[in-house]
Amino acid sequence: MTPTDRQQLEEAHDRKRQEFAEAEELIDHYHGQMQRDVAQQIDAVLALYKQLPEADPLPVINQLQAQQAEFNQLLSRQIGALEDAKEAERRAFRDLE
Image (cartoon, rainbow, N blue to C red; front, side):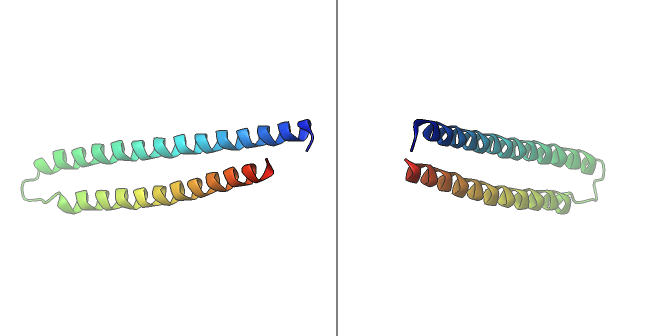
């Protein structure tokens, strides 16, 4: 392998690593945003239901929390796929060295 080939491989690997880092940041951002949004929605539901003494807020809160759990599962799968892709990239780069 020529030094130029080696440099191109390293640059491609560095770009991939940067893409992975950006994807991780995006996943973290969406996770944090979802956590904040659900907390705000639950607070709003509780405030609304305080004004309706006979009404029970738990079904709405449970639905919000179920959607949050579903979203968290989706993010977990995405994180797993990202980790698999990172490991495959590391192995492929290591095999080329």
